[in-house]
Image (tube, rainbow, N blue to C red):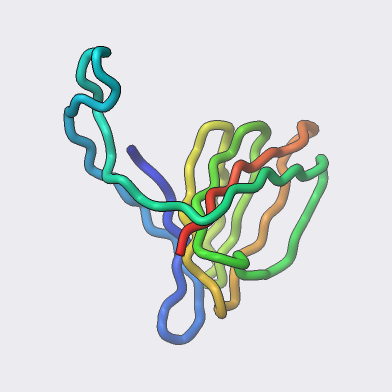
Length: 121
């Protein structure tokens, strides 16, 4: 599984990193055949967030360490080192930037964007 990691360095600047999480074949849901499964990670909460077309959120850190899955729409995310990335429906990100300069988020196009967020410790 590939995802975009947004993280903060020691100076509070934010950056992107492309990550590929390892998967292994295991009997996840017997009697179904074995599946490719990632490592188990505990979660502390979940929330869905809806953004209207044209939405722009200036620099802000994610309130918690969290996974985000883009369910609908397209967003452009910027980090404080100046890099911009466009995420489309189905893409996954991991935000680990509390106490930093954070990121920007802009909804691209005429479709609303919906994020499913899984909070972790």
